[in-house]
Image 1 (cartoon, rainbow, N blue to C red):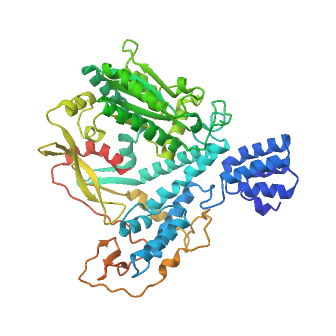
Image 2 (tube, one colour):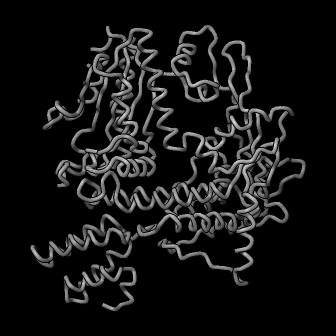
Image 3 (tube, rainbow, N blue to C red):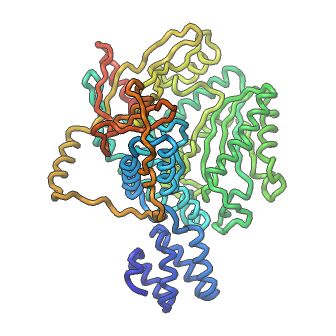
Length: 596
């Protein structure tokens, strides 16, 4: 086996492979399979290969490696790519889309060109109807980063199938995913230190300072959740409701591993995010519809957390009229057990309920450890599901939720959190009472603003609250904030840039297996299409104009001087009415949250 064929293997992995087999062709066979697989997985795979090679022989060992090849196919983006490479690839893809935008071709031709670029990177076109919106997204590095990072879900799914996610390996997520998430958070922390928010009164805060003040800070997030839980419980007592603590999990087919780490023969390969969709759509949504038909009112909190193998399950704190408690329990149990009700353990473990006895403790006490265990692990001690320290377990749970886009905590039947965050007191019980019983009810006051991500589009943001019915508005977010690079960070960056030798630094090599098909077909010109200057652009996207011809055909015409990078957002300063700087620091704590 030539040394050039195994440069992707570590020295330890090469040594281990040589110790397993003295056949160079066999070693090259294994090395080729390992090439697209993250290096952190190599030791586990080689241990499995070595065991089979010793106990079952070369043929079974090679069949095992062929099975791994099926899980980590060398198609599309390489499974060994890390987040830095994703960032660089997103930059490359956005530049490619910008550079290849043709001049004066029809909408159909342009759509075809963009579709080929998307296919080349193994992603779907943006879910938009209008062509300008599609172009805006496919020329945005931010959009590409988000889509390309979904590649990591495929890696994690392969890791689950390969046996890298369970109590005896990587609890909740693979070690690769946990490591990548921590690296991403460190990078984000550095970015927050470099950027600052400035308002019209001159108040300046780094984004790191703002992040520490809001629910981006795990301690603040945990405190806010507990405040809402306690307030919800207080309100339930005012109206005479009782509390129930419920647990719902999925059928056996969703679980890859038993608790001892052995594989589950019933596992059908379902990903954790799709198991979450099962709980939400097949159990919860259907149960809610039935409860609504029966006129049963309830409210509370749902907590989603993973089993050791990454399969989600729910804990729910529900408050209900005591006359309706049995009906609520029966309905939830029926839908939780609608699928495979007679499989072993289903009746005992699929759905459990505990009626909360105020004499033994508060309802908030029931969920406190589940909230902490899934935020930062504070004051929990041991994580028995993951068989580890709760702080370490919480970091891996957070990585799991981030990877799959799973909402860990969700209140149901209560007032909206957006309104409450505009209040000046943290009295959730009083807020619920006003919203549910008060003569004057509030709703968010929304404002349309230009999108910072996609020029020419608008987004909504909250400016305050307004009363339902008469529409009396109260502005609580009075300042206009500009996000910019801090002067110190800018100086450091410019000094570093000056130090780089002329010619610059090339982009890091990106492990993407490009197809032989190119995306340049969009350059093919059609017959010239005419449009009149009296027709204003249908959409102006910072250098790309979309005109409608007399025959109704839409064509794109770049403005004079248009070049790659011209979509960069210009710095703008907004001015609010004078005399409002007093509330700036109180509002500043909310800014970081809105920037996420």
